[in-house]
Structures are given as structure tokens and as C-alpha cells.
Image 1 (cartoon, helix red, strand yellow):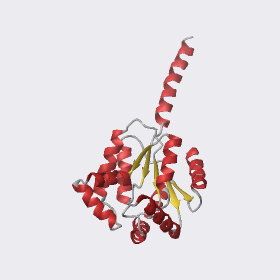
Image 2: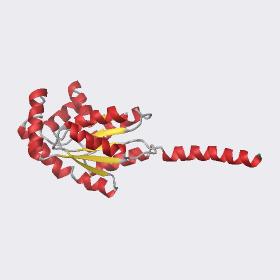
Image 3: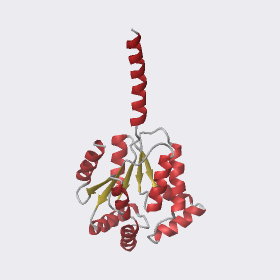
Image 4: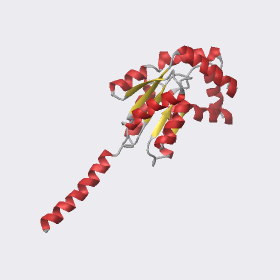
Length: 213
């Protein structure tokens, strides 16, 4: 009887140990140039897997709409097709992370965009006992990207959704952000999803990837 109780007691704590050490937040980085469909697929991911959506673009647009000093500066930078500084973006993202500690995971949309930001994100999550478990890159041809951005501009009337600015943003993305593919590939976390197809077809590929994580 004593042996039985000892085994049962130890097995109970062993199960707790396993559950604690195998629990992992579903933190996903969604990568892709402007017009690749990140926003649309982010909605699907959040709904399907119960993630907390952290959209850098949305956070920055809120600053712009409020016309805060930082919002005015961000508006000027975005209109020129360039990126907001790592310091500003990192601060916004980290603050947002800590507002929602009890979620299934975070979906980072539009962040990180540089190696510096990716390293900052890794350290921020590590300090909370978590990590990025996958980076999903939406691979779309430049010609299709420009067409999509033009179409979005006609619907939303966003000042940064015109052909000239779109081409600049795509060029900057390839020059400064595509390097993140290599960053996450070295960590065996990169998943490339062809995104030229329909929204539904692209989503099916993404969903299949996440379900296997």
C-alpha cells in the first residue's frame, strides 16, 4: 500500500512537471511585403487559434489618428515609404505584450521588420518564459503586390496606398526585411507560403502549417 501511494504521489507531480514544461504559447510571426495579405490572414489565425493580434501598423495608425507628436512623425515616415525606428516600434510592442499575459499566444503582424527588432522580440518573450515558435512568410510576386495595394487604396483612401509609395515600400521590404527569412530559417522556424492564389487557398496552407505546430 505504501509503495502504491508513493508511486501515485510521484506520478501526480511528474504529470504537473510535464504539463508545465511542455506548455508553450503559440507565438507566431507573420511575414510578408505590403499587399501580401497579412492583415486578412491575421484575422483568420486569430479566430481559428485564439491568438492575440499585435499589429504594428494598427498601433501606429492609432497614434497618427490621435495626432500625437509621435503620430505626426510616424505619419511623415510612412508617407515616404520608410520604416519607423526600431526604438519606437519595440516600445509599443513590448507594452502591448505585457497587457495580455494570459492568452494562447501572440500573432505578430508587421513586426519584426529588422534583425534588431527580431532579437528584441526574442529577448522580450524569453524574459516571460516563451518564444516565437513559427514564422510564416507570405510569398507574393511584386506585380501582384502593387495591384493589390492599388485596389486597397481605392477602397480605403489610405494616403500610403498609391503606386509610387507602394513600389518604394516593396523595395524597402526586400532590402531590409527579407533578411528575416534567413534569421528564422536558421532557427528552423520559417514556413514559406505561396500567396499569389486566392485568400481561401492561402489560408488553407497556413492553417495546415499551424495545426502541425
